[in-house]
Each structure stands twice: as structure tokens, then as C-alpha cells.
Amino acid sequence: MTSQLMIDLLPVDDDVLERLLAVAVADALPGEALPAEAPAATGPVWTEPRKEAFRAYHRGCRVSLEAPVPEVTWAVAADGRIAGAARLALVDDDPAAREVGLWLGRSHRGRGIAGEVAYWAMAAARTMDARRLVAGASPDDAAARRALERIGFELEHRDGALVGTLTLP
Image 1: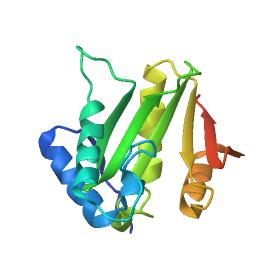
Image 2 (image 1 turned 90 degrees about the horizontal axis):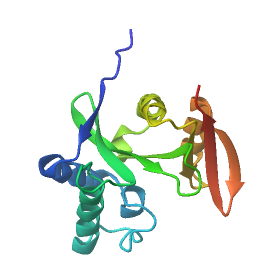
Image 3 (image 1 turned 90 degrees about the vertical axis):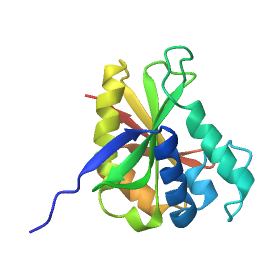
């Protein structure tokens, strides 16, 4: 008998942010947990500037009525333990699309978390009147490719990246 994995998405307040950073430092490379455009994203070691970039990124993605944000992040908890983070973002050139992103610590990969987060992203994007989800991955990331295909994304190579598109029902 298999047990059902309990997935929760948590707002990234300061306490959750420090717990999320601890998972990133212990269980992921900076380039896996920081957006590619972050100046500190490259490199294999979690330096203090990279940790600060991680904090600044997540603080900048907090939902606020005073300062609407184009991207929101949540901590992903699996069975009560922080496992990584998920995000949903506007796509500049396509108001009908939302970009979904996810990183998970190595010890949490391969457990079906990506699929659960994808179902959440589909529902959240529909409440925003989106008609498509977009997701990107490295062309060398076979696990990400399999996860995107399993969820139903149509994949194509674009500008050196693997880009998936999923039409929402």
C-alpha cells in the first residue's frame, strides 16, 4: 500500500524564508534555487552574497496590495517538511499565459511533488484568466523533461532551452 504525499504551498514570510534557504543550502545548488537572471545564481557554492540574493528574490515576490508583483513564490512543503519553492509569473508578451517554475532539494526529487505542484499551478492560473502555462528547463535535465511530459506539457527547444507549453482546460 502506498501512502499519499501531502503537499502544501506556504507563503514565504521571514520564518519560512529562512527554512527555505536552509533547504536550498543543504540540498540544492545556487543555480537550481535562484532564478537564472539573479546576479549571484552561477557558481556551485552558497556564498553570503548568494544567500542574500535568495532572500531578496523571495522578499520581492511577496504578494502585496501596495506593490503588485509580476511573480509570486511559495515554499513547497511535502509531508510537513520544506522541500523547495514554486513560482507563478506573468509572461510579458502574452497576457493569456503564466510561467510556472519549481525547484526541489535533491532529497525530495522523484517523489511526485512536481505533478502535485503543476495541478496547483493550473488551478491558480485559471483564476487569473490564463489560458496557458509555460515552463522552462535545461535541455540536459532528463528528469525535468520527463516530469513536464508526464504532466502534459508540449515541449520544444527554443534559444538553447527546453520550453513547455500546456493549454489549460
